[in-house]
Image (cartoon, rainbow, N blue to C red; front, side, top):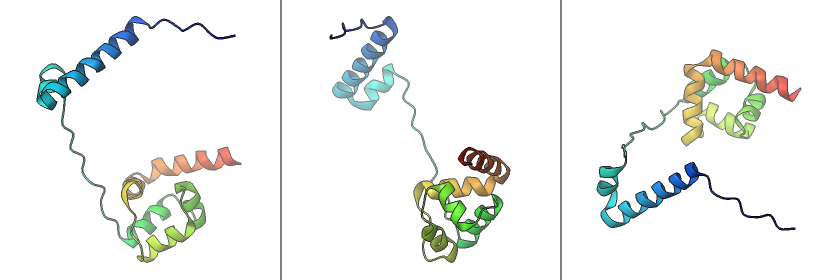
Length: 121
């Protein structure tokens, strides 16, 4: 038996109408036209910092994990962690951002590691 199509809610209808209006403004006048009607804020995000092999090791030491456990926690291979720590490869993109955060907030990440380990047990 086929379900009857649900009627749209007033909020959903308003969201769709606003999105259509935004698309039309961009189509006809580009971003400046859209910015005149909608809040358009440019966002500058700094790139993640470059990390040395020693900093990668310090990030791992900060959360008190072996290379194998650290790799599982990050969702990468242990050979990649070894390569980062030996300096033969450098972390890229989101890995750099996460490793920098691990260095900056080791207490927070130790707690996250404890939660991940206790859930896996």
